[in-house]
Amino acid sequence: MMPDARPTALPGTGAFALEHATLVTLRGTEVLHDHTLVVRHHRIESIAPSRGFAPAADLPRIDATGWTVVPGLADMHVHLLPIGIGPEFGVLDEEAALRRGAEYLRVLLACGVTTVRNMAGIPLHLKLREAVRARTIPGPRIHTTGPILETRFTFPGLAAFGELVRTPEEARRAVQAHARAGYDSIKVYNDLDPEVYDAIVATCRELGLQVVGHVAYAKGLHGALAARQDSIEHFRSYDFALDTRGTTDRTRFVGWLHTTPARIREVAERTAEAGTWNVPTLAIEQAIGLEGEPEPMPDWVPRWIADAGAEDDLRKLFTPAQLAAIRGGMEQRFELLAALDRAGAPLMAGSDCPGCSLMPGRSLHDELRLYVEAGLSPLRALRAATLDAARFLGLDAELGTLEAGKKADLVVVSGDPLASVDALREPLAVVADGAWWPVEALRAPLSATAARPPAH
Image (cartoon, rainbow, N blue to C red; front, top):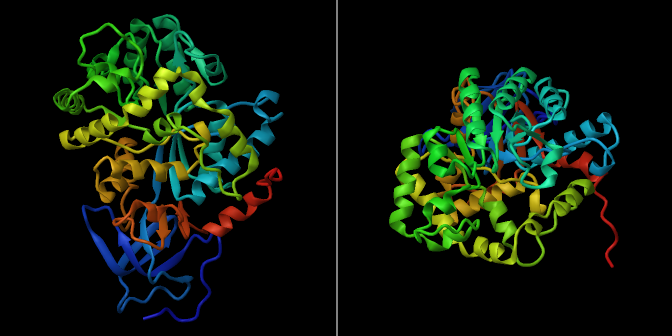
């Protein structure tokens, strides 16, 4: 039965009834057909079969016949732009930086991303987080690390969003300062001295902060697992741990080419025992190894975002041999991902956008497609970007499934994401913190800053 002729919800509406929808609840394998989902006061008020259910008379009603609703998506490894203020970042003052940051968040939201974990925080990101919380700008909820902690900067660009910690005492002070500032977690990096890494972990445990990021070379994968590092990004140092050659060769990525199924299974089981989460970021690995030009961003994406992604070409950091090893080891990354899942090691989805021209939001869809290519089911891939992300953040009582009482973060699509995760690529509407946003309403203000240079 079609709803009667009442106005549908306007953009930003905070109370409405979504009728005759198919709901992929992420409560196990549950799929509810022809159901009505009511949102009020930023939460899911009720879910009921549409037959015989009459929403309150004051609610705008939206006919969702033929539509599928899933929980809002979480990209658990992003870099929110801009990363600084000044001519080198293309922004001259804080007002302009906040305006650009709001545009970046809007792009993410228009792709169905309602939660992000920002992996290199600066004070500007704390202000963006507060603006989203206060509902003064639409955007995904933000969880952010502080500036990246490193004993020696692996590459000079880290100076813009990193902090040197050369002694255990400097490490303790930095973690304490980040906690006071309000950052949600602490990010570690490649070249931390072992005693500095240990001081970071110990201080985070005292303060209740998660330790996330790369694996310090001096500790190695097994040192990070022994420390119960909360999350490892990009499968860092798994290449060294999986290498069966018994060599002292420490060339990055080559180890992927010299492993075995038995070694992959062993390392996956050790990861599961440690309880350490992994964020594979296969999308950025694929982009780094790409031969040729990346797919252009859609015309509605602001030009400055496209330019920033093109400028952050991570491929220039690696030798031709390393790039070849990245390409050649993709199948082994797939095998590790599947082995971690079989072993029960926790996984969540993140894309590392906007490096190598990865489009914010769309890059998460690319990530989920790669999980399916690695052998995960579409439902399992979707869970990595919804319920599992909420579990990692300690928010699974509030987010990650479609249930009455939970926060209303939703994505509405026309296809079936359990048949193909590509159904998520073009959402019809997004609900963020209870507000209804048709995708065209999110994209329209962005088009004004999305002018492209004329083709030659």
